[in-house]
Length: 123
Image (cartoon, rainbow, N blue to C red):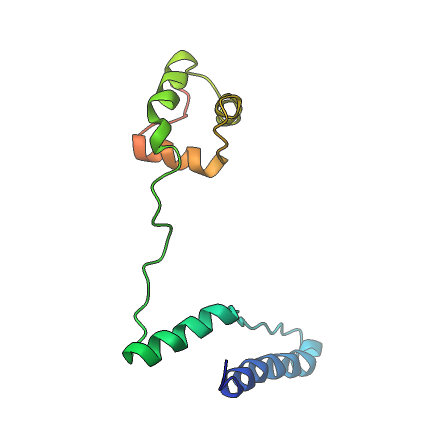
C-alpha cells in the first residue's frame, strides 16, 4: 500500500511523545497513557480502493448483520425452559450442546433479553 509515511509518522509520533512524557513526568507521580488504534493492512487497502473507485469512503454499518444464533432454535430453547424452569444458563448450554447446538453464554443472554425472559427468582 503506497503513501504509508504520514500514517506511520503520526502513529509513532504519538508513541514517542507518550514515552518521553512518561519518562519526564513519572518521577512526579504522573501516569501518561495513549490510545493508538490498529488498522489491519487489508482494511486500509480496501479503503484506498473504495476511495479511488468512488471518490469517497462511506462507513459500513457496525455490528454483526447475521441473525441471532438461537433464532433457528427458539422453539427448542423455550421447550427446555418450560420443562426445566430452574435450569441455569450453563445447564441450558450443556443441553443444547448435547443436541449439537454449540452456543456461547452471551448468545443465550441476548436471546433472553429479546424474548423478555428473566432468570431472577420470584419470591
